Length: 109
Ligand SMILES: [Zn+2]
Image (cartoon, rainbow, N blue to C red):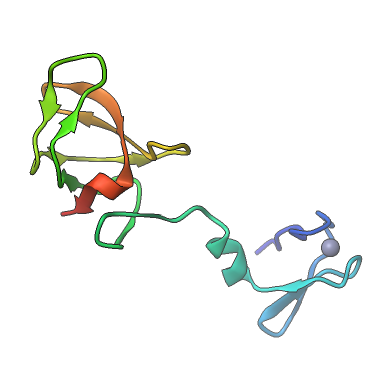
């Protein structure tokens, strides 16, 4: 298993000390769990953590910019992909095609 670089100074000389990882160059101590938590966590309307490949359903009618179409409440969206930005879910909706949704308007199925 290779150790991660120091998140503070990017030193490659991080070593393990019990459960902690220690950087000899800046003396920063951290755990591998801390590193996981630094990943962006995207939650649905109920506070459930979403991940790539999840199926969600839309919890309110969503108007689609520049068209008269509305994605109806209850629409199921399969195989979502999380992304950065204001709209943090990238997905394909049947009959609509690829679009981006806000995680606050969906819930995990
Ligand atoms: Zn360091």
